[in-house]
Length: 369
Image (cartoon, rainbow, N blue to C red; front, side, top):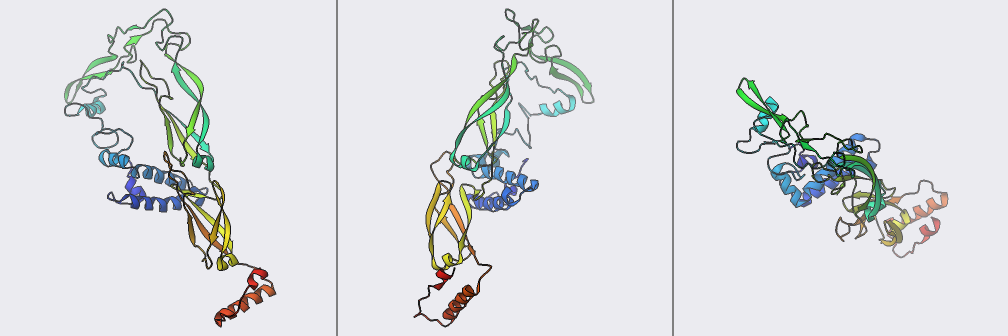
């Protein structure tokens, strides 16, 4: 495997979904860019953690990764590591390709060929990532030439079969090696593997069959998308060759940090200051959320660092109506400068507690502070 996602998250291969989620939250909080500003190493680690979690938290992707060592849809024994590239009986073709530059197999070069993908970055706000938004992105891509309909030949003319390779797109060259005589198959030097040649090239595309165009694409960014995730728009990449399909447009999402909230998965975390009096006596406070402020009752005797949860006030799950939660940590503010009257009130209060004077009503802290 090129990447060990289990090692990245620090879990065993037998780890449960809850163990994976717990490990991800711990590491994501440790390496979050907001907690490590200016540290490129931490930012890279955060991306790796996100990538690993996206695979291991999805049952289908995890099963494919455990089986084939990749979650990109390659499957089989191809792709990364192992016996990649073996085809047909015995699978020795690629070994001889590496040694002799061609191998024993014939590889057609003139069939339909898929176009290349295009990858761009898009930076959006924290709120837009949570709620979803429609954005536009401008790209430069190769498109089929309308003048020649992608043939590369001037109007009124056609491509003709290459006389060197007779349309196969390949040449077979016999080589003598220490292992004996081998046939090296390589792209035709005349047509470049196309199988056909153009006598009168199209003036617009110069015989290439494609032209570069600038396009503005409308992108629907779903609610709940997170930093580092990739949106794929099928068929919006470069044009294919010889009737092949176009490639894809891949949009890498970059989310701006929020001044108040920290996001882990679909949950939000917030540090909120409350006064010593509010913590001691209890109070109803206003808590900011992504949808505006809400009222929350702080219980009397709240201790510093107490975390309370607001259900369904986090981020919407991708492709779902489920909502994450908002976790608020109470930071109790202790006064640093007290006047003599305030000090006396606190001393009197402390004395009454020590003496367990239950019969005395004590309201002075509210007035003093």
